[in-house]
Length: 404
Ligand SMILES: Cc1cc2nc3c(=O)[nH]c(=O)nc-3n(C[C@H](O)[C@H](O)[C@H](O)COP(=O)(O)OP(=O)(O)OC[C@H]3O[C@@H](n4cnc5c(N)ncnc54)[C@H](O)[C@@H]3O)c2cc1C
Image 1: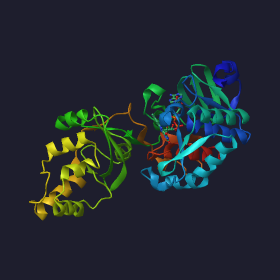
Image 2: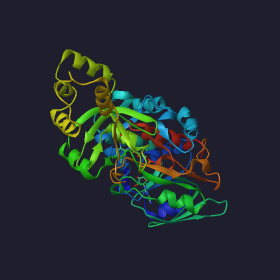
Image 3: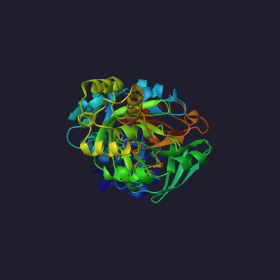
Image 4: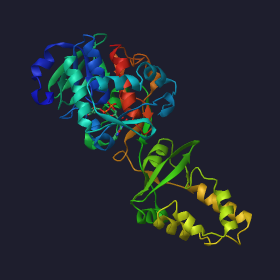
C-alpha cells in the first residue's frame, strides 16, 4: 500500500499545499479524495503507520459502513439542526453508489445496517484507490508538534518530518475512543488554540458497569443475552442486551449509553411487545406454570436469578389483581442504576467535541478562524449504533471537500 512508499520529507516541505488534512481515517480519506478530484493539491498527515485503523476493526472486522435509514434523528448533537445539511446533501444512497461502482460485496442486516460481506479492508482499499485517483499524498507516521497560523496566508505545521505549509487546514483527527488505535485529543487542542469552544466529552456506545450485588449477579450470567427494551431520558431501544463480568452490554445498552448520564437509572422491559398483565391473568385462570412460562422467553439461568430476586409462586391461582400488577411492573419496568460507563477504551465513539455552533454546517469551516475546518467525529456529533457514525464521517467530509 501507498504508506510503505511514502515520499521524502523534502518533498512535503517543498510546496505550499492547497489543503492539509490531519487524520487518515474515514472522514480524512473521503475529504481528501473529494478535494483532490476538484484539482486541489492535498496532503494527508497521520501519526499512525497505516490509514483507517478504525475502519479495519469496525463491525467485527466487516465494517457497518452506513445505514440505509440514516436521518438527523439518529444523531446526538447539542445543536440538532447542524447535521441536516450535510446528511441531506450526501445521504447513504450516495455512499452506496460509490462502493457499488467499485464492486464492493456487502450485505444488509437488521435495521438497515450495511456491512462488507468479506473484510473491512475491502472498503479501505476503495477509499485508498479514490485517493490515488485524486492524486492525494500521504505523510504517515508523522507527529504534529505545533500548528502556526500565518495571518491570512494559511498555516505552517511543525512536524516530526519538518515544517509543512498549507492554505487550508482540515482537522479530521477523530476523538478519544480506542487510544490503542492512535486516537488523540489533537482536534480539541487545535480547536481551543484557535478560540473555539469544545463541549465536554464522554464515552458513547459503551457498556455500562455495575457495582455491589448487581456486579456479582451479572457476572454470574456473563455471556447470556436477552431481547429487551431499555429506556433512559425518554429514549428507548429494543435490541439484545448482554450480561458481562462488569455489568451490561450488547446493542440495547450501547444505544442507551449515548443518552445515559451518571446518576440516571435505566429501565428495562424484559418482555417487550407483550401485554404482560393480560398474560399473567390468563396464566392464573388456566392455572398454568408461571416459571415455565418465563422459560419460554428467557434462558433458565436468568429465570433462576430473577426468581431469587423477586420470588413468585409457580401457580398464580391465589394471586390477586394487585399482586399480578406488581409482577408485571417488575418484569416490564426493571429499574437499575449503572455505577459508571466502561470508559473510552471500550467506547465505540466519543460524545461531545468541537461545538457545532462554531462551525458552518455547509462548509465545515470554523466561523472564528478562516481556512480552518473540522469534520467527522472530532465534532460534537455522535451517531447511534448501526453505521450512522461512518455515514456522518462520509457526509461531513464530502460537504467540506466540496467547499475547499
Ligand atoms: C471498535 C469500534 C468499532 C466501530 N464500529 C463502527 C461501525 O461498524 N459503524 C460505524 O458507523 N461506526 C463505527 N465505529 C465508529 C467509527 O469508527 C468512527 O465514528 C469513525 O471512524 C470516525 O471517523 P473520523 O475520520 O472522524 O475519525 P477516525 O476514523 O478515528 O480517524 C482519525 C485519524 O486521525 C489520526 N490522528 C489522531 N490524532 C492524531 C494526531 N495527533 N496527529 C496525526 N493524526 C492523528 C488517527 O490516527 C486516525 O487515523 C466504531 C468505532 C470503534 C472504536
